[in-house]
Length: 134
Image (cartoon, rainbow, N blue to C red; front, side, top):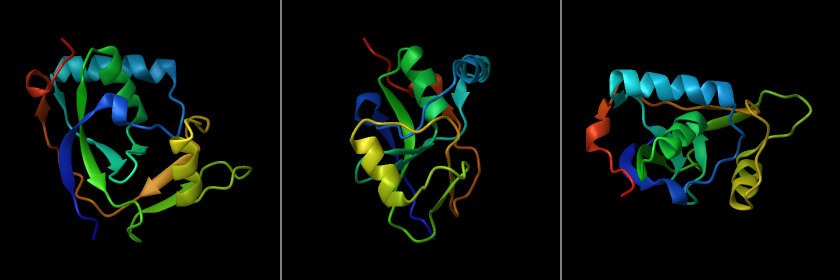
């Protein structure tokens, strides 16, 4: 079972491994503002701060002026965390994902799919409790 550790992570520490799409960013920002909460923290490799799931939420928070975002920090080497390619022409492994992100390179949107055994309950982080840039 994957160990779950939730922290408010500074946005500048996070390393994306996939692109995001503009249309989806607007939708995510509207949803977050409408509900006033972030229901699901992003999923992040605790060692290198690679975003495994939550690229659109991260970019939405950046554009909304937040300094940090709630993140589930996990050990990406945990064997219960799996990654597969959604694009047959692109080989994907955990090492490839990590190396690409650390180098500041990104795959096209929706290249990877991560699966893991984590509870999918809402965590309900109120926006008023999340640090914004001054």
